Image (cartoon, rainbow, N blue to C red):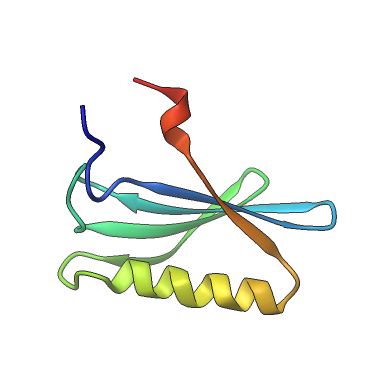
Length: 86
């Protein structure tokens, strides 16, 4: 079985003892729209951006935000959630 071309991404960012998680969430598996970029801090969760009609919007916003995180001293890693299996 092949993984869908557009699968959700989970990115863990660490700065010292602080941990943040960014999620690129596709509402329909295998499709780029609709999408959301979700920011998680502890038990709090906030949608930073969402799109229903502009393909690539969520990906671009996530890339911009990750670059800012890097300049602020955060180290971010994309997590491979496929290891959790189906």
